[in-house]
Image (cartoon, rainbow, N blue to C red; front, side, top):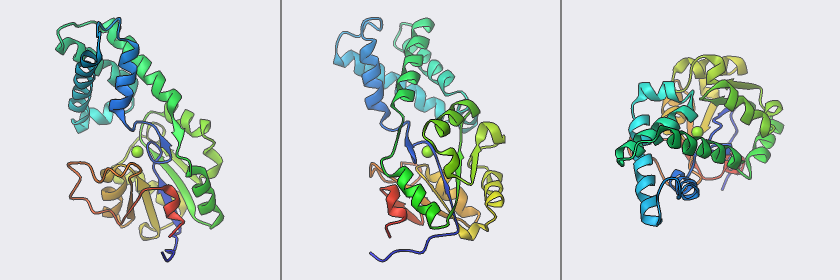
Amino acid sequence: MSSRPLPRAILFDLDDTLIRAYAQPAEAWTRLLTRFAVPLAAPDGAAIERLRAAVMEEARAFWSDSEAAARWRLDIPGARRLSLRRALARLGRPDEGLADQVADAFTDMRREEYRLYPDALATVDALRAAGVRLALITNGAAEPQRAKVERFDLVARFDHIQIEGEFGAGKPEHRVYVHALERLGVAPGEAWMVGDNPEWEVAAPQRLGMAGIFYDPDRQGLPAGATHIAPDRTIHRLADLIGG
Ligand SMILES: [Mg+2]
């Protein structure tokens, strides 16, 4: 494969792009709910599965309202509590105390399991060495997102880090990208945005004249509802950015 010229700047998403954070929720919920099988009175796999389906259904309903989602992504632990409370109520055994305990355990488990994608740091370092200006643009609250950036040694690797909770606006608002481009000193046509969310990291940047690169590490393709979006490129490994 012939190598492609690199752009002057690349904007990276954080969650489920540089670090694995929220991927594979069904597997994670099953594992967590199994730990609480006794208090949840879920004696077998079928009972756990009913709980998992109810929790994920409530979460989907919750996050599909884009206005509510924009508020709640600044309080993901709170959103999880609400999804759990609604799921238990729907199954006919409301228990807010237990719901909150299970939801908080899920939040802790997810946090413990955050991992950099194996080629993330090497790719970022290679791009830096090649002279590409780099920004990290992440939605979410200031405290947990800042903690991730520090935990994974990302601060010094980026020319600009922009967290929704600190900046005051999140993707896909255009001013988010415009501000980052200004800070990097590049025009939209000189920049790529890379991430796993087709609306936030492909469609919105493309509307501004940037290239939108879809990161699809699990080879799931574009999610339902995003099939109208046409990434400039799809990559399955971050290292593909430098590998041609
Ligand atoms: Mg993401």
